[in-house]
Length: 88
Image 1 (cartoon, rainbow, N blue to C red):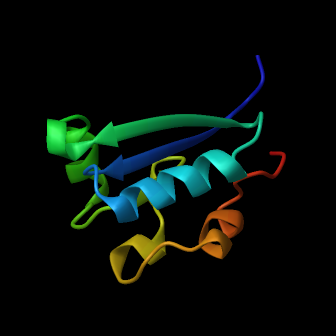
Image 2: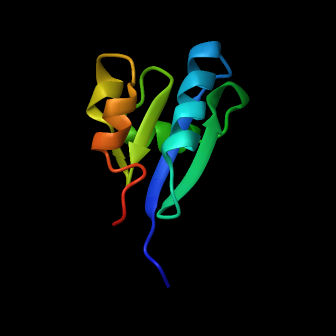
């Protein structure tokens, strides 16, 4: 069984969230397992609390909230630095 990078995206259906969802989808590869949670619909609330999500959009990779999600907008470079699109 091939190991995958687990990517979880927390959104609330806003235009900024949609842009991050599009970026994650664009940068993901065969080594990525994507899960999208819409907190507006109460999806993934427990996961969001576990990771300390306080604002959306937010992205966690392999169970860790990206540092950028704690204090600034998510960029393409942040996602690439977290390994999106790269082999494991």
